[in-house]
Image 1 (tube, helix red, strand yellow):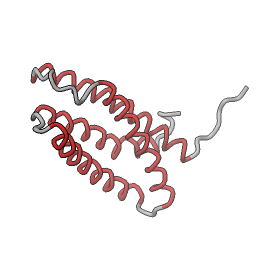
Image 2: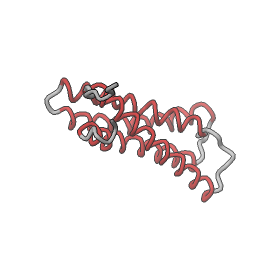
Image 3: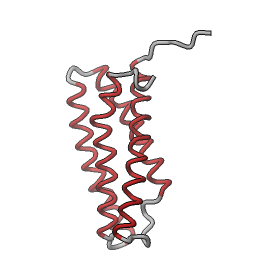
Amino acid sequence: MNYDYPQSDFSRGVLSGLFSGIAATLANVIFVFIYRSIAEFYVFNGMDITVIIFGSILLSMACGIIFYFFVHYLKQGITLYRIIVFVVTAIIVYLGISFRQSIIGEVPDEFRVMVIVTQVIIGGLAAFLIPYLFRHDKIIS
């Protein structure tokens, strides 16, 4: 049986997003673990392992799918995609902190640092790793 088949652009977008999500998950879990131990910040469980895993992977896969549409249907798709990723990352950071603050009152500074850094990791990998993997599909196939 021959299992060799060419990757479609859509499948490369999804796989790029998945691979980026796995990398973001590992980076975020390592960061949160190290940051919590250094800052001795254990009482506030707004950022637990489930949120990190599912959030990182789902956001990155959505970015991979969106990247496919940008590249496939727009002339300057990669540049516009990166701009949109940076803007959306900034909005997610702002809304995440604002929304958290409105529900539980004052948000600890340590939590704000964790939200900002984890979202920057996801956004940075989505902006740079997904386009790289999309063009170099030998890595993901």
